Length: 239
Image 1 (spheres, rainbow, N blue to C red):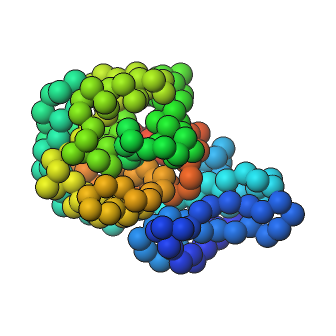
Image 2: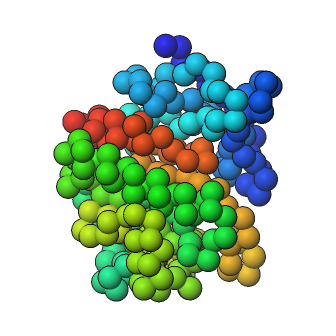
């Protein structure tokens, strides 16, 4: 497989990933940066392989390149306080004691193709991890975009309704309101706000190693779970 780099310019409010029927692939990603993105083959073991052209109407899985261990930098905001779906208080660092996948949603979201789909995809990932015997070795963390609104009860209800089994290995959380924007910005999360409330957002997940360092980000409308499972397993094996 040949590695291809795609330079994309992002408009966080309008960009989308998709393929027009019978047309060339259009690659636009909700993101806060211009960078090289690689198309990821969901079933390839080579993590930076470009797949054959997607079928018409199908989303194109995209991820940032895999960051080598020596090139990774720890997140600066691991000391953020948070409250989980059970009402228990934590510091983010406590939850990143193993490879983790972080993603965002919020209970007020009206777009079923965004927040509801994100949590449902996370639930499907959880089932895939169970089948591979990895569920106890990694952590899935769903973070609300609106911590001022999403109480533990709202968090719990939203994610349980979409199939995510909550516990020590999978959590829905709200960050401390005053620090929330710092982590959102650091993870380059595709979201815009108006007076503190979500105005528009994309879908993104961040793969974090056990040292709290970003390894790669999945930046399509929905990531591919087979790729994420392989990536988590690669981290568990020291990659």
